[in-house]
Image (spheres, rainbow, N blue to C red):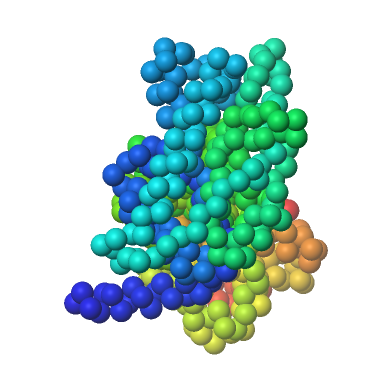
Length: 433
């Protein structure tokens, strides 16, 4: 494929996302490691592009590394409790100085006019202010956290007014009390609070490159995030992001993205391509699972065709699919069917067949099969079905892990026996619900 054709295909693929993101609100947290890296200038270009595409942006900058450097330069030892910095009266001036230096540098980079770039001549209206009302953390486990604080309130209406005028709002991790006190706030927590207060469409964390990135699925459900939080091997900094992701999703923030800046343009790849680049957290069970309709048949057939060709699934004709479509559940992402399942009831015998479970290769580790199985089990219970069964040649272990048991003496319903092919050697598994 020529470069010209690749560009055309890319632009056509990006167009739906450009339309979908326009006038949407995104909260983006950028670590100071990224801000002071040689990759930051590319990120500045991308932020300008998002702004000119009509996306409402609230940006928060991190400052943890910068604070550590300021303390080290002044021979002060950083102290933490529960992974939260203890900010006492001695270190507070240096903490404020470090935060303000990061903010000033950030502002300078977004005020350059972007010469010699595709966004040359563009200007970004960047506005900061005392939009965060803070309060002290107090004493935790007998430890006085002193000037370390948490969010009391976000002046979200004031932020929304600025976003409506196409300003980019820049926030530092400082909170101000109504009595004039200043508190050092965890930036990840502040980003989550801002996203929830604004009911943002997306919360994005842009971090340094993670060594364990490849060990995580590209899409995580909130349930999977909970499992990672309970795993002692999960790094503490990742746990902090996952905790904020869960809280954001529960507060109706649609999606949370965790992106490392390993590749120039990683933010654009995550937002404007189907496969993305980073890690996306979403409550897929509630957002993506739905009953199938006649318009989904083409997408379902395209999804299951490779499995039919390899003998994993029984071949279904389009006519048969049309007759059974009301029994299907699907998960759709960006207009593409990425997972499906059927639950075909036999009311006369008070049971139902679980069939045609398929998940796109790119989402095999995303827990979609489990979510679809939960969906059909709930539907079966509502319909008074007491037992499920399935026929499988290669997925028996997966079904057993999800509560099914082998049942060699199980008698198939009369309607199923007519189409059953014993030469496939399928195992019969059942589950009481």
